[in-house]
Amino acid sequence: MGEIVLVISGASGAAYGVRLAEILGEEARLVVTDSGRLTMAHECEGLTPEELVQRTGSILEDNDDIAAKSASGSAAIDAVVICPCSGSTIGKLASGIGDNLATRSAIVAMKERRKLIIVPREAPYATVHLENMAKLSNWGTIVIPASPGFYNIPKTMEDLIDFVVARILDHLDRENELTKRWTGDELR
Image 1 (cartoon, rainbow, N blue to C red):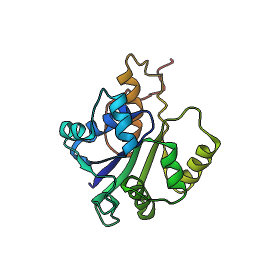
Image 2 (tube, helix red, strand yellow; image 1 turned 90 degrees about the vertical axis):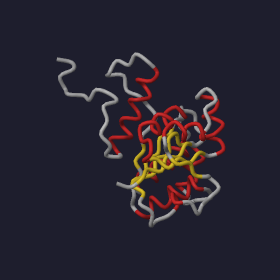
Image 3 (cartoon, rainbow, N blue to C red; image 1 turned 120 degrees about the horizontal axis):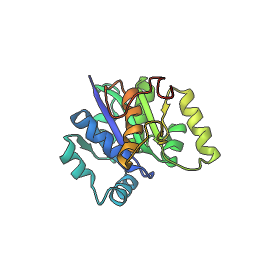
Image 4 (tube, rainbow, N blue to C red; image 1 turned 45 degrees about the horizontal axis):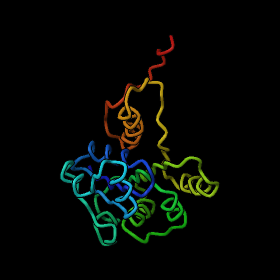
């Protein structure tokens, strides 16, 4: 199995990316944008990418290094996940702009037909975001909005985060037991 490139961009919802990094551990190559670094520090009690890497065993790559492994079409990369994915990042991808490691890795995923998963966390969406997400979806990108479900009767914020992370892991073909799966018998 190849590695997963995990990008944390500047949208609110850094806790989703942090939790995904915790689960992927050494499988993850972490890329954090400048805005992602600020958002992560604000929303995750001062957590830095360096501390996250130390905690998870993932590999941190510099977002300014477009020659890093994550940007290579020949590298053994299974997928790129941008979690959370800002509207600016969505716009760049929909325009084919790969001006940093985060966007370059995603563009390479598209050209190599690797899985690309974006996790937008906006509310409401601007029409331009919806149009760009539709364009990316038509090109094979998986769009998983950070919209937790409530049928598992969540008790904590962690339960809500795990719901979304479990959906991401499902699309990465990674087994997980973060949430109960719907069986169809819940309402009987």
